[in-house]
Length: 337
Image (tube, rainbow, N blue to C red; front, side, top):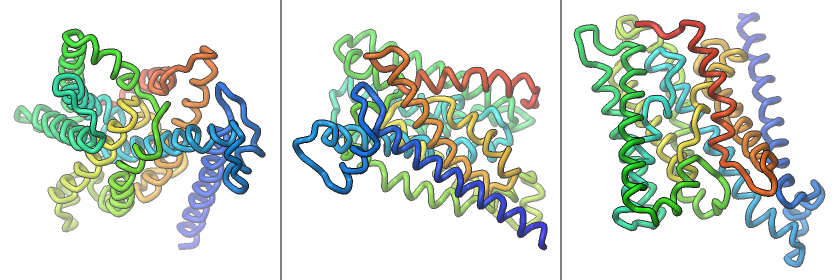
């Protein structure tokens, strides 16, 4: 009992330290960019706002929404990735690789370019619909055959569906060159230019997803023991899988609706989180949320300086970080038939 308490205290301390680092990155995101702003000006923009100060106006109208958006989508994608990896028992699974983000992106491009839809609430709704369609399709495709759903088959199904949705998306953009200029920067994954109103539109759904993910964590611990063992312990595995699937759709769909398909966060962050939390999902999920938010904030800050005075989309920076990590995880031979 004492050892268990000491372990929980240590993990709690680590999580609190991570949260402090997260706050520092949020603050740094408000200070650094094309227009350097002192940390004191950032602080005064909250405590002594001066409407005649260009620096404080930039902080409140541009940097604050951008920082909070980056933190929100980082936390959401990381939590979604940890749940997907728990459901599939596959450390290579994430919303991007399984086609969920691509499905949401396809639906948004379809509505915005073909049907000229620009309403954020409508695009948010179709983003969730696209994520749900992709998730169901991957599950059904990965379940084909006598051996049922396996880690390898779900990765192959996700890769195939990602390629399909990506091809459809590119095809629509080729046929509609005007739509190409409107959505191309969004398709690479970006938090630049996002307003606080855009974040408010999806934040309630994300918040419900965060709370639900923390609630389902203890059930994920049982489910990862194997379906037969979980059923033997009295768990209603179908309900747990369905609930986890809905949470994943809410988190991934909301992230894509506001920032586009930011890749690899859901892949690499849960792996990092396990280094601190072990295999207990009651700790993996909150650790993933904090680390995911930090990673997207760090990537967004770095993206502002790589090709100054221009900026890279944050999705490119996360890919630069994520591709080597993906290769390293795959080389361990974790994916099993």
